[in-house]
Length: 363
Ligand SMILES: Cc1ncc(C[n+]2csc(CCOP(=O)(O)OP(=O)(O)O)c2C)c(N)n1
Ligand SMILES: [Mg+2]
Image (cartoon, rainbow, N blue to C red; front, side):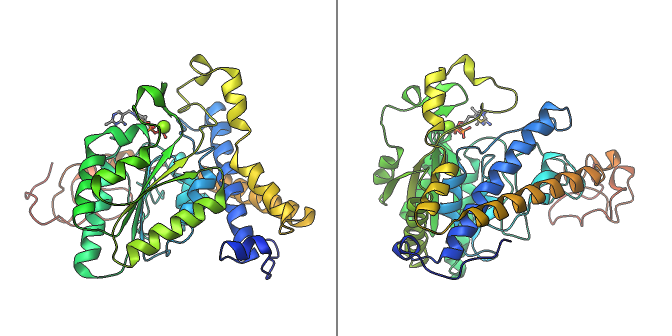
């Protein structure tokens, strides 16, 4: 990493941070963007099958997740959570292995669609594809933490469209009743694929829904990294004190199409897309740190170089890793005989132990 400032500028002090924190946050926002851009290049050149992007969400995710305690708290992400999982300990190599479906991909061993980030090592729960199911998983983890009195906080992320699913409301209601240590983050980018916000909900601020479940709802500008950091810290500390959940709605932007299988110019005007670009968190944070004297030209260039090298390394490294053995395709789908002697269990290591309660004999 570039030589870090050890000072505390007025900007850092105002947010209870050091300049070093600000530079690390900036690096994470820039790194997430660069990895994401590389994913699109790999897709368009035929090397990655599918991309779902976090561009426009990075500032909110880095700021909100910043105060979580890595390796202790829990993160329950969704497909746009690239910046959040990087903030919480995953590496560019981990992201690229998931993107290219390699056997050593920590998210799923190359078995899930790209974008389903997870890491047992880092307390990052792997996401299911049906949107908003992760809300229930997060609430369950928070309930366990409360029963066990561990002091752990769980943060989960989802889109605004997904907040119309029943799972979201069931999860928030349960968490409100039991005052669970969980932070719900709705990243409102204004669209659920091609459906605009006005066709998704009759209210302007989804944070208002928290009132129905008896806990605070907070709206934050998702392109303001430090405002997100403050909102995240307050919610995490409140949960840690045993005062229960918070719903944070970060107003973000979707700078890309929904996915590599979508073309957003079919349903968004050039003017709208241009206006959205002006809110991009990356240049905004860069300007803020320049104005505060935290980021000078040399430091900015050094970070840009580190980011480029990290993305190149992750791409080259992941491309060299083997794909999963096709003979293992059914692993974790059906129960397997004890000892893993079945033909479908060989290839990349021993078969997993039979789970209690699963029938003998497997598939
Ligand atoms: C239960 C369910 N319904 C539909 C889908 C298909 N789907 C995937 S992403 C998505 C849009 C979600 O929009 P939003 O929650 O706003 O998140 P965004 O993609 O905008 O970040 C839909 C409908 C799904 N994965 N799960
Ligand atoms: Mg959305």
